[in-house]
Length: 81
Image 1 (tube, rainbow, N blue to C red):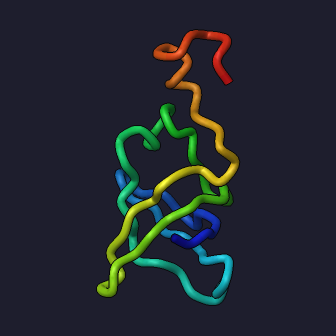
Image 2: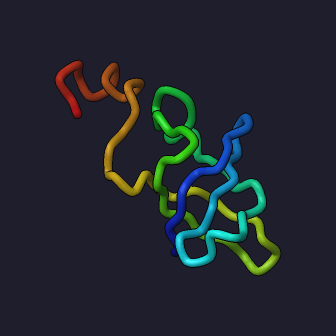
């Protein structure tokens, strides 16, 4: 597992700038459904945890701040944070 900051988001993928190698960026990493749009509330500059395979493909695992997006309020209740 690695950590970094989102450089850009396009559809269901995100490019991440690794914390340990900020001169490089990842290939587009898959954003799971529960982290997309309002549900994940992710944006450029946000710190995330992610993992990659030897071929450079990979997935965003979680927001590093442990929070969730506004979309979860409809599932968890309006006072959920």
